[in-house]
Length: 167
Ligand SMILES: Nc1ncnc2c1ncn2[C@@H]1O[C@H](COP(=O)(O)OP(=O)(O)OP(=O)(O)O)[C@@H](O)[C@H]1O
Ligand SMILES: [Mg+2]
Image 1: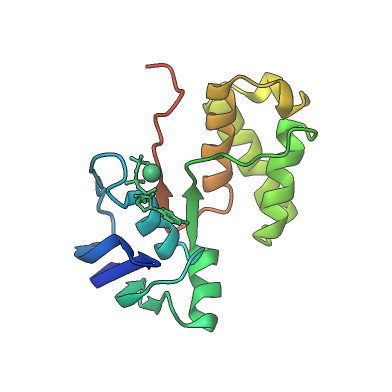
Image 2: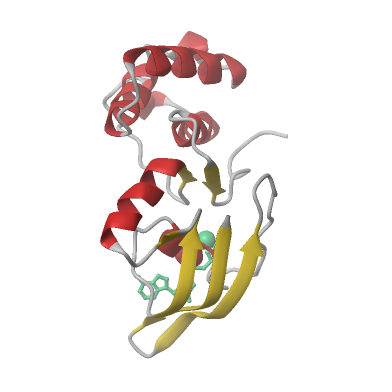
């Protein structure tokens, strides 16, 4: 499902990801661990087609991250919880999710159903009409987790998913 061979990313002379190779199967939960600055976020950004690779190969569900047409298909089938949540502070929780779900071209029924399901699951349904700018860090993290799931992705990338969450 995720096949990476010698994936490398340089920023000028600095090598942030150095010849990374691994394979992840369908239905597998893969923990990607390393010290601060090891290159985890950089790897996830390459696999999510947010930044380019310097060399090596990476395929997501058979699609090549460095092929422009393939990268659009990859974006459709992945969900991403980024390191920085990047939500709209002056929209409500509900409107944030509805906005992103529209970008993913979810149908009205899928949007309604998933927003309600995940907000209830994470205990934010009562806060759905509240502006996100007033949310605590953990509440924003939960909302960003919901956003990553809103379009029923086949693959989920979670960068520091437990950050700011209570036990
Ligand atoms: N845009 C950039 N320009 C220059 N250097 C960068 C850039 N992005 C990342 N780096 C460098 O690449 C290295 C890996 O960073 P990255 O954010 O991938 O680490 P990480 O494993 O996610 O760390 P953390 O656990 O702290 O989140 C770091 O030394 C960082 O400074
Ligand atoms: Mg990181």
